[in-house]
Image (tube, rainbow, N blue to C red; front, side, top):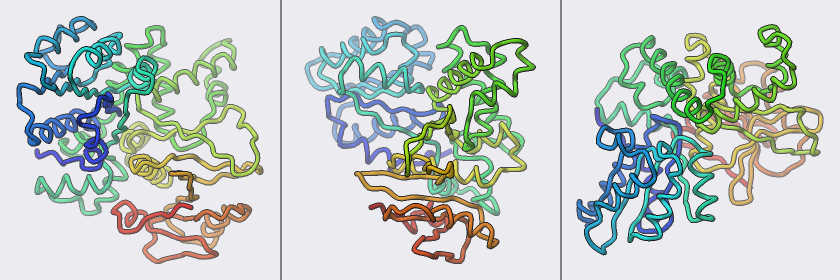
Length: 411
C-alpha cells in the first residue's frame, strides 16, 4: 500500500531541519510517526545531504534489539560518525531506552548534528527532555488520519471508497493500519488489540505496580465513554461492590492515576475547562477524548455509534491537529459549551450536534450561548446541509469544515 504524505506535519517541522533544537515527534503508537520520520529523511536527502550522513535508528527493529542502555545508544550513533560534517540523527520510539535524555543531551553537546526523535509517552519523552534541556526541544504532536487524509489514502491507493465514507470514518476512525484490515469485524478486532498492546507497552511497562486486570477494565470504560464528563469518584462508587471494603475516595485516586497513565500514553487526551463565567471548581470532574474515534467505538459498540460524542471526538482531534488550544466551556450555572478554541490570544465558541432536526434541538444548541455576553464568534457545527444560522450564531456543516471548505474565525 502507498503511504500518504503528511504535509501538515512536514510543513511544521521543515523550518527546524537544521536547527540545534531536538525535534520530538510525539503521539499514540501506530498513528504514523515512523512514516513521518521516513518522509523527513527523504526530504533531507533530496536537499543534498549524503546518505552516509543520515543515522536512522529504529529501537523496535531487530537491528537494534540489543541497544537498551544510554551508552549503547550513544555508541550506536557515535560509531557512525566519520567526519566533522553535520549528521542527521533519527531515533524512533526513544522511550525504549531508560534515561534516554542523557544520551540525547550528550549527542547534542558533543556531535555536529540535527536530532529527531519519536516517542509514544508524553511524560517520559517531552517532560524529561524539557527538564534536561531547559526548553531546547521542539515538540510536534501527531494524530491519526484526519478525514481529508482518510480520503487521500483511498485515492492514492486506487481503493473504492465506502458508499458513505464519512460514516465509515465516524465508526472506525483514522488509525493508518486499520485500512489494511478486511471487513468491519477485523477492523474492530485490530483496534481492540491495538488498545491492549499500547497499554501493555506504554502503561504496564512503566507502572509495574498497577493491578493489570483492574486497569484494563477501567481503561476500556474511560476510552469508550470519552467525551463525557469523567468523575473518578462516581466510577469508584459504581465499582465499590467489586472492591470489597476498599475506601471509595482512595479508590477514586487510583482511578484518577489510571486516567493519567492513559493520557501519558496518548490513548486519551485531556480537555481542560475554560471558565466563561466564574471560577468554580468541578468537584473532581474531568473530560477526555480518545486519540481515535475508532478505538472509542470498538471498546464500546462500533455497530451502534454514539454519534454526537463520536462527532465531538473527531472535531476535538481535528482542532488539535490544526494547532488550536481546545477547552470545554463552563458557565456559573453548571451548563457547558462543547468547545472553546483559542489561538494567538483569540477565541471562538463551538457547539456540536448531529442534526438540528427539531425545535427542541435548535433551542438547546443555539440557546447554549444565550447567557454568554462575550463578543467572540459562536458556531453550531452539525451535519445539516441547509444553513440554520440564527441570532448571530453561525451554523457550519461538519464535513465541509473537515474538508477545508469553510473555516472558523477567532477574535
